Length: 169
Image (tube, rainbow, N blue to C red; front, side, top):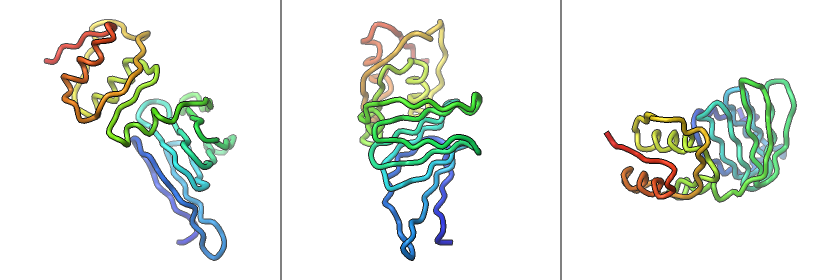
């Protein structure tokens, strides 16, 4: 089949895709993530589908998103589409692409991200479990951390914000 290239994604990946031509017609490259279909129009983009929301960030080029039979959405560079499958709703916002592609360069970068989400990312990377002793809903974290630091050092960096304390057990 030269008519279509399809990938199914769970988790997170950064794609760099060149347009492919075959017999003078473009071959669509499609990334399926749950309910979301993304059609690539020659581009660099990042998809994160770990949480309840599928986040698609376009770094350069263009992509077309569709969700089930419903609305299609064309993304522009430095836009992020967040699709909630439970609400079947998509919101588009402008972002700084630095944060999305930082992890490809061995860095976690967080921009006003809730501590809960930050810890979710770290928990996956370092394979640790996290327990919260109190409500942390309103704490946000901005900063970047090397992925290759010892987890203890990462947590120390985060404690510098004075908002959180960690105990390794």
